[in-house]
Image 1 (tube, rainbow, N blue to C red):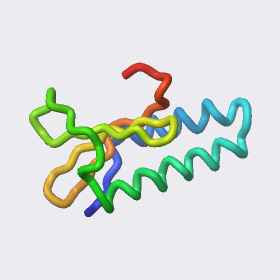
Image 2 (tube, one colour):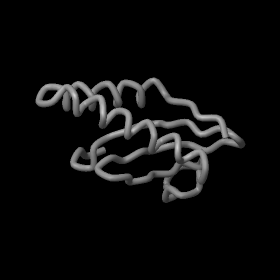
Image 3 (tube, rainbow, N blue to C red):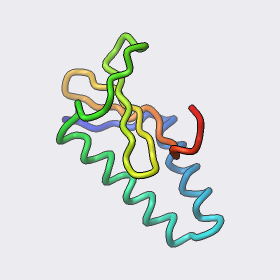
Length: 90
């Protein structure tokens, strides 16, 4: 599977890292790295996320640790659409 990130998901990751860095810059690096590793693991089992029926396409959502990832599966491409902390509302 090919993994792509939407512009919004990249901005989400930057936003999360900057927020964490306000209190703990070193932890911000670790969290960002863990998020990226978790996303990369989705390529091994793309159907692991819950399918969101209110979308016409195969959009899925997965909660891993404290973070939520929304992604789209199209043929052999996974596009990460959004990333947020579970305490945020989306």
